[in-house]
Amino acid sequence: MCGRFALELGAEELQEELRRMNLPPREFRRPEIVRRGYNLAPNTNQPILRQLSPQNGDSFPSEPCDPSDPASPPLVLEAAKWGLIPFWTKSPPNYAQGLKTINARDDSITSDRSMWHAMRDRKRCLVFCRGYFEWLKKGEGKMGKVPYFMKRKDGGLVAMAGLWDRVRYEGAEEYIHSFTIITTHSSPSLSFLHDRMPVILPPSQIETWLDPSRPWDKDLAALLKPNDEGLEWYTVRPDVGKVGNEGAELVKPVDEAKGSLMVFFGKGGKAGKEDKGVPSSRGGSKGVDVKNEEEKDENVLLGEKGENGLSENNAPLPVPVQVTPAKKRPVSSTPEPPSNSKKAKTEMTSLPTSAKKTPKRSSAKQKANEEKKAEGSMPITAFFGKK
Image (cartoon, rainbow, N blue to C red; front, side, top):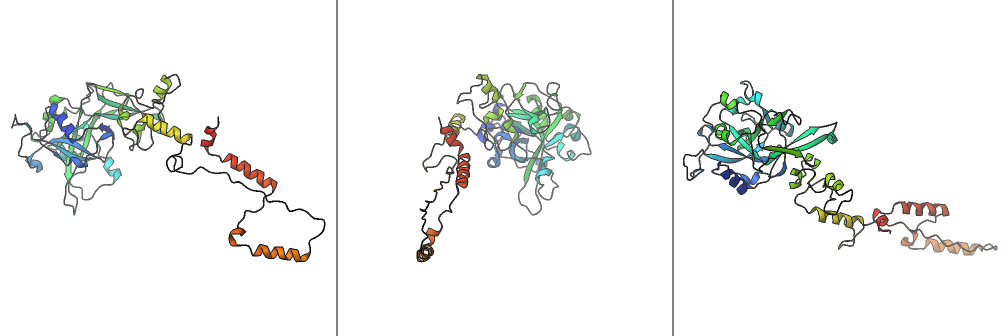
């Protein structure tokens, strides 16, 4: 299957890349809603390449795709949601429903009784990516899954076969475009990883697949086969398992990415500041200088203060409570006269309110417990500050 891929190119960069592949689009529709990055998940808007057709209700731009060849196929890049929504849908599907159509099995597409029958004739498209992820199961739970990244050896774009559709919900004015990625059984080389893989089309088959004037036939069905020619794959950091993580480090081999255990142990167990980074649980790499972030974290650990006088954790350090023992009154063998006691009592009652809030007297045992508790609650910064 294919449930996560990478495509970091912006609108202009992607169009330029397609021109080099002899697939020049006439335009890019709604590029502003496309999300680009190295960890793209379902339900996000991604660019698809399709061929315009009057049968699909398309309007044609005045300029041809290739000025030197006016008869070139009218291709267009369209921003579409990952997770196909059929045209007969009346209301937006929820998240779980959208996940059911992120992939379409090749055997389902070839069947005349599946929902894909309505799209396979003239709504075929390509989904481009820099590479896609798959997880190797080695045990139970999340810790038992090892992520792999599949990409072209030459660094080019991977062209995955897909289907698209558009729908306008009841009461809505605009159309929603969506797509699915077609999968087939894995090639022998990738069968160790998963029993399914996306259908990857070579350049010689792209024009045939995109032609909407060609109805579905056995020749088109024959294109849905495993293809790992020109691909390479390797393990990557487990950070990619969290959708919120992002950055180019996620698609690098695990022994080359900053902060990986392979780099740590490769230094003989002594990691330098440039290699000892720990991936963030929120933002992944995001182009952040790992070295600077680690030095900042180290300063926080040592209790370095910022401009506001507080440490970088934005919280004041806890201060042990100092309890001042009350002064013992001299003991006299002669009892005080009743008048003096009454006078002292009157003076106590006449004290201001602020003076009444003095701490209660503590016994020696209570004092020892409080001092012990204060020592146990010292911040970790004080511990590392001792030499």
